[in-house]
Image (cartoon, rainbow, N blue to C red; front, side, top):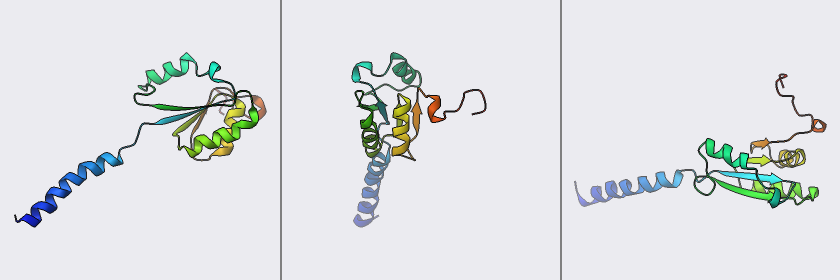
Length: 128
């Protein structure tokens, strides 16, 4: 092996681990969208459910919180901000938050905890 072959093989061996590391997905991000305020923030059950599935905020999960503070007309703007930040999923905490998220994206999954009949939510256990 001459010097040129050694440099080519050596540099590709160094570049591969760096390229593989660069392709690893960053920490997943949940976009938390609420029509309420930070004081009414995520429940203990929300964090417990995350822990039970192996996710702990600031360790292997990031959460971007957006609060409308009762100003429901801000929800579309806040939802669009979360989509622009490329969150992995949006957790909508009310019917209005879920609707704003749905209008902001067709690609980011949306999970919501509350839904009123006025938006045509499926009934659980009745085939949907």
